Image (cartoon, rainbow, N blue to C red; front, side, top):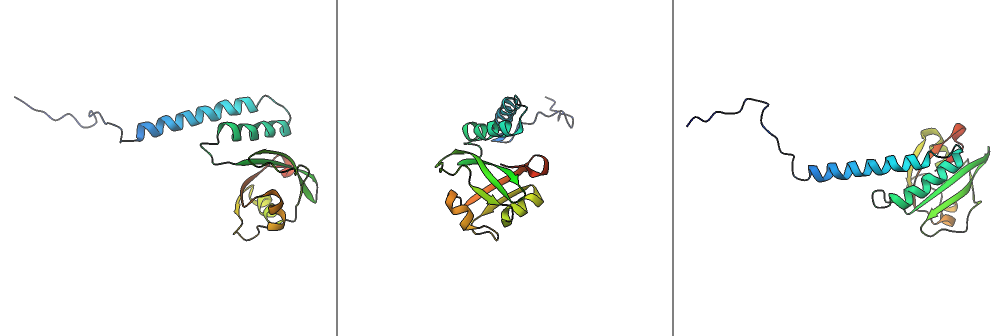
Amino acid sequence: MDSAKPESGTETRQPAAGTVEKSTTYRLFWRKVDAALGAAETSHDLATTLDTILKILLKDFRSELPFVAGRLYEKVDDSRYVLRRWYGDQQPDKLGYAVPITYAAVQMLQERGILIMRESDPGFDRNIEDPLGVSVFAAITIGEDNRFIL
């Protein structure tokens, strides 16, 4: 009997354990993202689109992304953002709540475009966040002149 080694590169490689499951999970996640973006693109109004995105994130992505609530703020003048929408757990009766642009977190957010902050971080203001029941948040600015905070 003659046993020959296969030529280099012709071996069949088996995926590592767990790789197939991860690949399937990621594929399903990105299909879900694509479907969600398709649903959000139906509006030509940015505020309505962002409202739809908030609803989708909380309804469809709660298991993948550990969100408990989503808020949408709109800049109404050069001094403040006003809470326009709140979805998710423990919705306070705070629509219309104003956050000053001078708040350190808002200043950092405007500079960076994205911010994750905990109550233990410098710049977190309990006087502003406590009425909303917030101890940690992730935020992004959206729109011309950072018109919205999501």
